[in-house]
Length: 314
Image (spheres, one colour):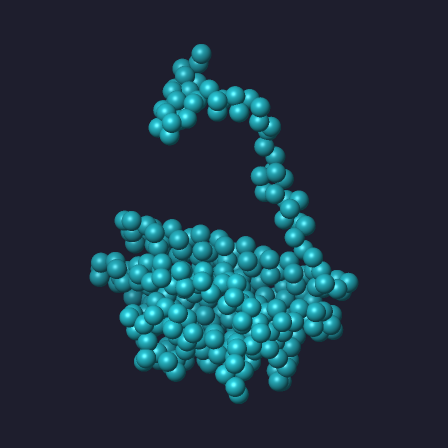
């Protein structure tokens, strides 16, 4: 037997001995296994059969696939956040590398809204959107999870209630005062709209577990746990700012502008029934993941200059 093959067999023996497995059984399984193919590995057939239209309007397919792509990108983002949050010996270089990956994903999302902005006929959208009620993009659980894992919980609380909430506040109480709760309630009665009730019924327990898990390991807290010298690293601070601005201004405004084109700038409600203008626009929500990394002027003008590249030069 070739010495290189012998070496690999020995390594396999050691690998399976370490977990109490029989190497011979695994080799028998290898003999019986079929060769890998691209379509089996990527699950292409399953992926391409996940698009189910509710109407016969062709542009509904664009709408479905675009949102499915968003959800796949959200999963990639959460995969990278998890690596930072759960890293036992986090270094500045690792933090920067993973943040760059995350920002590239959100850069792509921010730039991709032209697919929605120019990729559907308005008349078709107006017709098929009524079949989506009361579903809403608001109900993306992965996007909410990105928020929970990116920043400290207080930064996601409705501004009106922040002074009454701190680290000792029960998570369920904090959950009921998140900024997006207002978008899911009848502003006259305070009652939760149906789409918010559905959303909470499915995900509330999961969200509260995530809030608890990431309370001390979210990106912002991990950044503040670094040595002071590392926190002052210009490249790291720029990556944090870029991510914050891209998620909470550029991507949101791209979404807002696409919605404005298809829903209009009047009083038309979103499919879930929310006041989408005030819910989405950064100048209303002022959602900021890393507030200590912005100066007063930048904070005061949050969401006004949505195309400016915010970088610290020195």
